[in-house]
Length: 68
Image 1 (cartoon, helix red, strand yellow):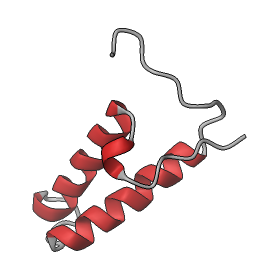
Image 2 (image 1 turned 30 degrees about the horizontal axis):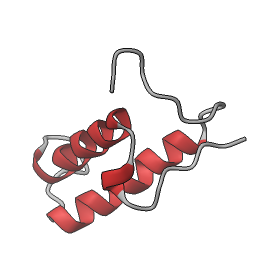
Image 3 (image 1 turned 180 degrees about the vertical axis):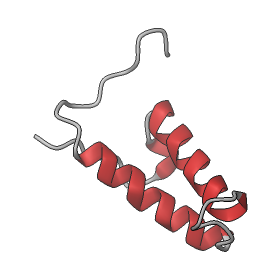
Image 4 (image 1 turned 90 degrees about the vertical axis):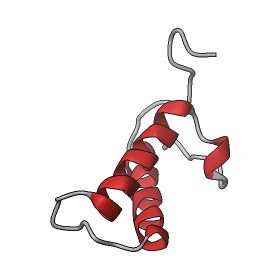
């Protein structure tokens, strides 16, 4: 069963939010080929990429060990 993230990014697990923030920053400020996007566009693209990655996960959401 695919993993689905909540609709609000603020409700995502910590590791998903961290991945989102990192990707958005790279797309906005980084040296990658897709850098130089506006913040709004970078955040939208990053959210889509993280959602796609999580949808490919084979198990349901579970907290990481050691996280509260």
